[in-house]
Amino acid sequence: MASLGVNIDHIANVRQARQTIEPDPVQLAFLAEIGGADGITVHLREDRRHIQDRDLQLLRETVKSSLNLEMAATEEMVQIALNTLPEMVTIVPEKREEVTTEGGLSITANEKYLKNVIEQVQSSGIPVSLFIDPDKEQLEASARVGATWIELHTGHYAEASRQNKPLELSKIKEGAAIARSLGLRVNAGHGLTYQNVEAVALIEGMEELNIGHSIIARSIAVGLTEAVREMKSLVQNPRTEYLFGK
Image (cartoon, one colour):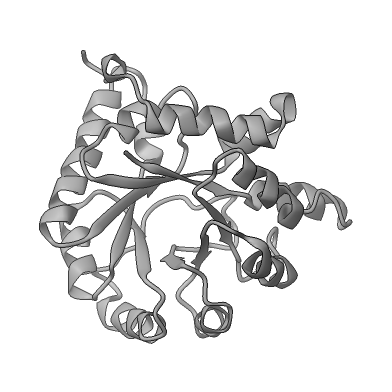
């Protein structure tokens, strides 16, 4: 049974659009936890476009579940992680011009550097997850550099047409199986919604799904606590008949 990590970056997006003090992602993280969130995820970007250093500091002090810090593999972010000590660090690719993360890391192109970053972070007791596409070469490289977890990028599955969804889902399933055979623990996320999450939650060995935009969008109608509660119900009680191609 997969757990649910709730990404609250989009709450900060609304606040930063007006450069004001509300809505406060720190306060609303509490409502997500009341709704059943098993963890809170934030991405502290280099340009600070949404989550701010102040948010991260206060979340570290107030989150009762677990705190997952998404970050680029830079010296600045490594020091922030070591000072903050979240329950997990997820290393993600980052481009200043992108609206949201567009794809997985290339581990094969940066093995030596990433191995050093992972060693620095994990030596402080913080497990590291790598956000990657479900690609065999990237999975094997993730094991070589010493990551504890991988988070499979589900964006291609989420964006696929109904006709192509079974193929994209099979890639995630295969990626999860390969990862587990390499001794890696498996999470997944990106683009998951109330309509497509169940098939991913059913994948054997899937431990956590990180979901943000769909939950925050739903919360406008029903409130954050209820939006989280509804998503967690789908993640933990997925209908087997929901599998595409069945």
